[in-house]
Image: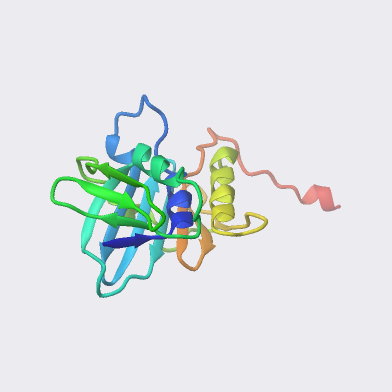
Length: 194
């Protein structure tokens, strides 16, 4: 049995690939890495990534698999008891998402390997100015709101032409890829203060 915080699952699910033309099926869901040491939820569409960690206990099953976006959406749509955790019960072929107030979804995990997300998380972004897609930044804002930030605030350490590192909480971090500017330089705006 694996306990999953509903709000953390909702925040992670915002970063799963949504484009039906995207044939990378492993990106159309949320990766769960669970063991007694902790639980991680990871989702990415290739342009933005969110990694969420949560505590676990000695009774937490060790399991790694991808829950498809459709299954996650079904579980998030359950009425009432939004503060209750969602319980993942892993199985050999089929798994189940359930909760204390009733409701269950039986599913088969998405087949295939999830990308090695650890390789894209920058250890120390350069801090150089970057251009970002505002829609990606809005996704981080909504994820922060899912995690009870009243204003949807998050921190962003820019990475110039490399990935930027996003901080939502002590247990939630993200990565956002910059837009290649095509030669457009970050403007010198000191004239505005003169």
